Image 1: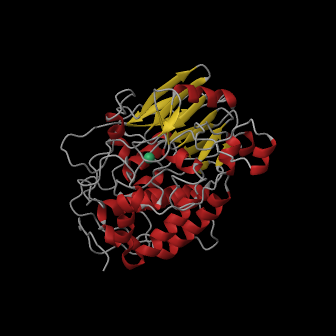
Image 2: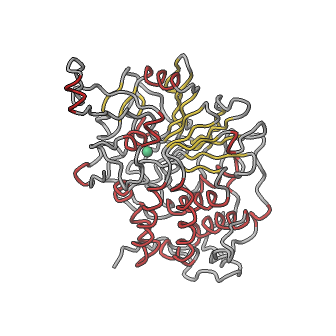
Image 3: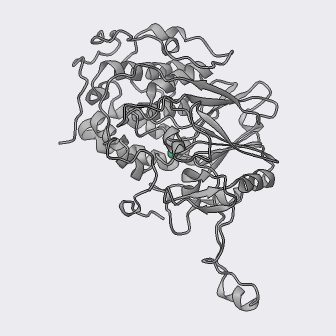
Length: 462
Ligand SMILES: [Mn+2]
């Protein structure tokens, strides 16, 4: 038997197709719009809630017969997930989204994602123009209601509103599956407006420790293993980084090392005075050509061997100490200093790096860097531009052993024409109260940041 965590269980019977949902069990803010409970430095051009907001969701969700998603299909999916999170026990999730519809959605998204470049380019060729805006989002970690708020606050993706998500959709929060699937739905609806990058949590190792695997098994019961496997396959397809308007580089962790080329014996013999010793070789900063060639399709990015760029991009952190060094706290990835930020920006004629990956808990342990109270920090200011960390999960983590919470805001960034390189920050508070639900990982035992990767339990895949 698979674990089934059925609490809370307010309403045993799932609504039928097209019928209004059964009233929620003692949930006063059922169907209330999240905009009223969350405050933020909201953008002036944010859209009012759409008229469909007040309509009950149509469930179960069905795949369109022609396989073409519509805006109303995607908004209904978001509403259905919101409703289910407040009204159904997690074990009845399949009554909202069947395995068959899940399969169709993941297949459609995977086809698109696997074809994308390691570093997606968002520029005039992708339709970026003088009327465009790009919204960049950091870690969201399964906090469904905050993601729904973010979409309402920033506005939905549309012809002129691009979105780049920096990864870490799942784990820790209780609705990673909903968050991931709703982002896939947007990707399928608008593949050239919505870009989903990979985070370190979109991996087999992290999801087995921080809750997502158990969440999926709970929500899909005996079909859970199949659903989890499909999710992992989709994670493998997620691109690693983006370049916006040729000016802004975004990735979950950040910068990465160059690939060390071991010279052939013949080359060594011919030119004896040039000593190439890869072991003694200091780490060098990687370039975009090397990023383009990395093999990203791995369940867990390797921390040893020759395919190290994906692990660096997903796991690295900035530091105030100059140079590149192994990220010993994490056990994978690098630490890079302001000099590396400058080198990277200058070399590729960029102005801004937007990375994520560090929440309030991680920053609590790094006194030389800013705290994550307002959802972002400006870490490096160098001659060529800036490096910022962006974190979009407010009141993180959802489950915590101590009473005292960080109470952090989340933030997203808007980039505007003509240059798209001056970030406009929008901080926002968590949507409260969150529906009551059991965590899917032992948050009291699991270390409170994803540091100290347990390398022994990871299977190298390179
Ligand atoms: Mn992360």
